[in-house]
Image (tube, rainbow, N blue to C red; front, side, top):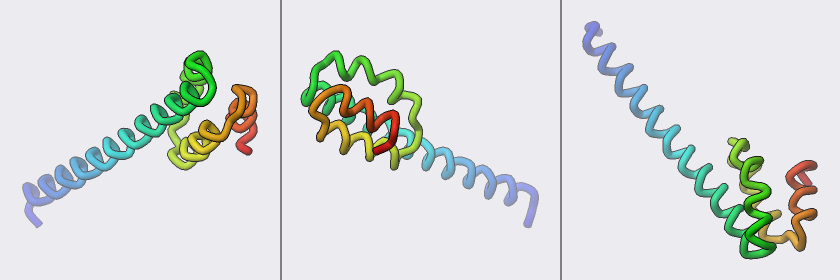
Length: 88
């Protein structure tokens, strides 16, 4: 393989990886927005504002999906807080 072919290959690989990471980050951000929307509609706008800083630090999509389910089932901010802190 020529040096230019190697450089092209690695450039393409890096671009593909960056694209995939961008897509993943978009899904994570969208899931956070849906959690906040559920909290706002289900509980109160203040609940969404309260939990936003904590949610913005979570990068694990599976965990965010769990929190989305908790947000749509929560009867109170305390219910959601318990899931957020304890994971159940």
